[in-house]
Each structure stands twice: as structure tokens, then as C-alpha cells.
Image 1 (cartoon, rainbow, N blue to C red):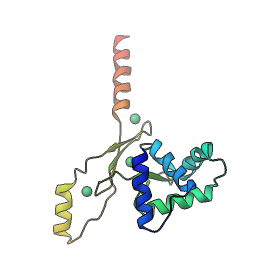
Image 2 (cartoon, protein in one colour):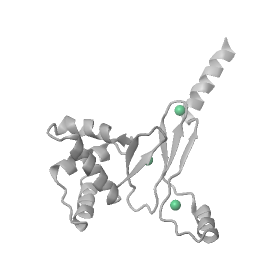
Image 3 (cartoon, rainbow, N blue to C red):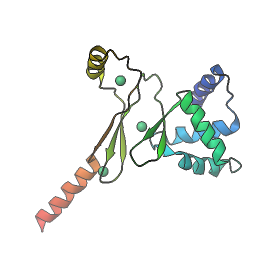
Length: 157
Ligand SMILES: [Zn+2]
Ligand SMILES: [Zn+2]
Ligand SMILES: [Zn+2]
């Protein structure tokens, strides 16, 4: 975690920003909740636990700055709430999401998988792809297992 913070610090420095204690507290919360897709308010409540003096506006500005510097990506899963997602180090493009319509779980696919699609888009539309957002909506493996168990129970009765 410390080396990751160091690298984020360097990223800020190279854009002439400092990693102030408030910014660092925000970054730490994002790192501790890397796969949680937190909203600005979620981040704020978690930052506040350790740094009660920080206000929502400061957290919000920090998140906007981190978005601008591509440390995080902002994503919306269709519920109108912006969520902040740490960008994978070294990844050229944003990872994909699997959103379960039954339980609301969000899983991530870290492999890009879109190489062939990207080639077609670049060729047929003469479009240089810089990034993409891909969200699948469906039923997750946990819900499948629950359904299976339920069915097995019913079959036994
Ligand atoms: Zn994600
Ligand atoms: Zn890609
Ligand atoms: Zn589910």
C-alpha cells in the first residue's frame, strides 16, 4: 500500500499537485476499499472516521482531481450515483463490470478481452480508442448458487 501511495504521490507531483494529508486520507480509503465502487458520500464517511476535520467539499474536490489525473475512474451503474474506482496500475483501459440485477453485487473483470472489437472499431470507424466502459447486467454466480440450493431444497420436499 505504501509504495502505491508513493506512486500516486509522484503522479500528483508531476501534475504540480501535492499529496496533502486530506488528499492522502482520501487515497487511503480508496485503496482500502479497492473493489467497493464507493460514491463520494461513502468515501467521505470513511475518511471522516479517521480524519473528522475533513469536509465533504474537500473530499469531493480530491476525487475530482484524482479523476482528472486518471488515478481513479468515475463510473455510474445506472442508479444516478457517481462511483469512484481506482484505476489498475499499468492498465491501458478501464476494467469491466458485472452488475447483478438480483442482489446488486458488482464484480470486476480485469482482463480487457476487447482486443478484436477494438481493432474492428478502429478500422471500420477510423476511430482511435483511448478508453471504454463496459458494464454487463445480469445474474451473478452467487445468485445462481442460491437458486440452485433453493431448487435442491424444493426437490427434496
Ligand atoms: Zn471497478
Ligand atoms: Zn480495451
Ligand atoms: Zn447476485
